[in-house]
Length: 193
Image (cartoon, rainbow, N blue to C red; front, side, top):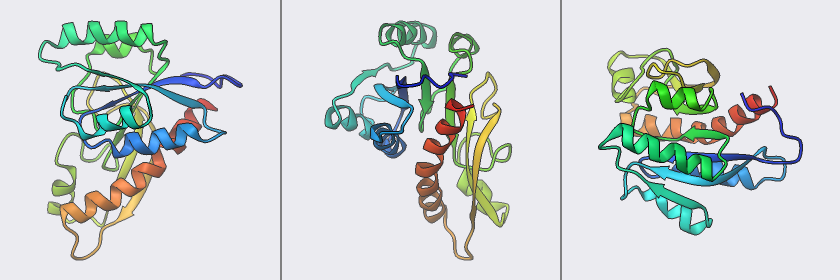
């Protein structure tokens, strides 16, 4: 993993597909004096992603690639990441699976946040599945990305208690609040490894 760089901040790209609420919390975190990262690029597979507005608000470069031709998009993306000297990638609600080759090129410097207590409930519709199974707890996980879906080494987790009348919407909201705190903590943990 990227080691602590002393005074220089680690050039980071955040990949999003939707509203970008984790992106926003990472941008705020990057502006804190003690933050080890700077966010230099926002990447999305969705040109209508609401989170892209943060590129304009915070004057951060953005790139949209549709991933229809995955190999081509990833090739383009690697070249964009190189040009921008990106050292770390944070996946924040990015709904595309990156290839083994892409992940290898980034030597384990890719982090993802997932809305469940991995290894339970990998993939999509986690909140619905958690409630259907009458779990007492759920939560979120930040992990390293490897070639298998939501299976990389876990960095940090946060447990969230499920209330009696919980819905997937209320649970999603509860967990998202924790995600905003957990992702920066996980980055700090990884960088000062």
